[in-house]
Length: 244
Figure 1 (cartoon, rainbow, N blue to C red):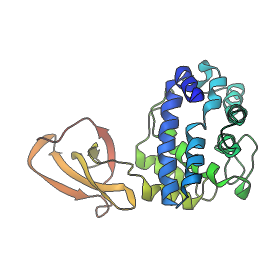
Figure 2 (figure 1 turned 180 degrees about the horizontal axis):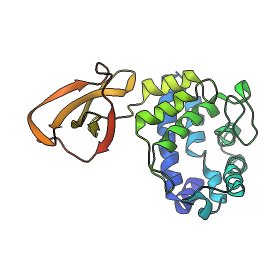
Figure 3 (figure 1 turned 135 degrees about the vertical axis):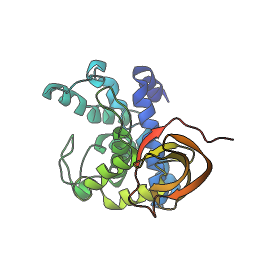
Figure 4 (figure 1 turned 180 degrees about the vertical axis):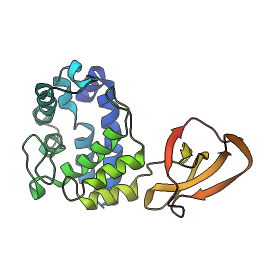
């Protein structure tokens, strides 16, 4: 709790990101039938995975432009910093510290800090890596705008077998409603509406209740199933509300 309080004080984005990653991580863990004891360790690993960023200068963390090679090296050190911060908390499993240490490692050895690959990476590290990348690319940052959730999913699928474990990505897709019910959206044909329900196991292709066509409200809203209309895509998330 002290570490989390320090994180929030240092940079509230790190805290918010860590909270989101924990939700995604636990959803994946439940989908993969990980037992309660290990879910607790996995969840602690997720909520504390970025605590090492407290030791990275804020001007580097929040830099709006491209990082220099030296600045990127400073960012990379957060995994090692986090490991040492957590392993000194004697009431927490060492595996929690390893989650912080390995969440940027990748299957092909292209990650950091150690460049380990495949089965050298703990399964929990692989799970947190998927959750971490998805939340990072779908969040607004000072140096770029957020991707839409389905675009974030495409980033994960582009790394299947090279960077990320396919079984974990599939579990993520089944477990997480990346467009939650009630979210207002615009489709690629200009129609606007709200997510009304989910297609089980396909979080990126929900049911949409259409409320606007050609820029005007319609009197009789209707449902569109994105899973049956593959030519339709969500292009924007909006701030509109369904009439009472």
